[in-house]
Length: 168
Image (cartoon, rainbow, N blue to C red; front, top):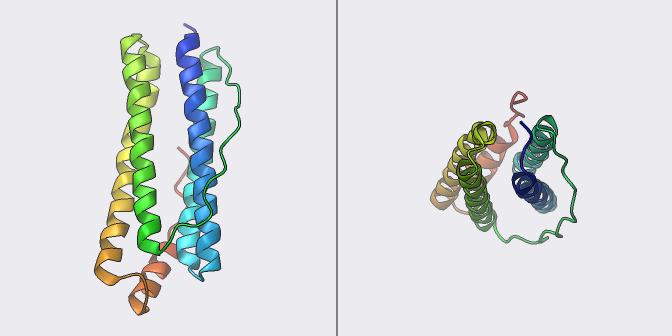
């Protein structure tokens, strides 16, 4: 059974959001590099890669269901994010907005009784729980240690140790 045009277009919009997320994280990585926080830059670059993988997964899914995504222009992300704490608060806020968009897609698939899309989107629902949890943990740590000093350098090293997850 082919995917509906409505669902295809809604997923296409999510693909655009995923590419924007990638751009946002890449912009954050650039600021981290400029602020001599290579570990934070590594964390953001891995997020950038994950977002590209998410967009690709959605495009591939639509193609397997007989649809086709039309790429749209991606908005320019900001280039300044403030302190590390403020930056990671923006990460959490952004991930919460992505979660809301995924939930809307899931609800649409449910209302269309599109069980295949509902099953595919369940992976994204679970992924968003992880994304928000990671950002919250980093924010909590930054609130405890502050935005500068030796503790920040320790956190930066920890974030630099993060490696790309195995392909989903």
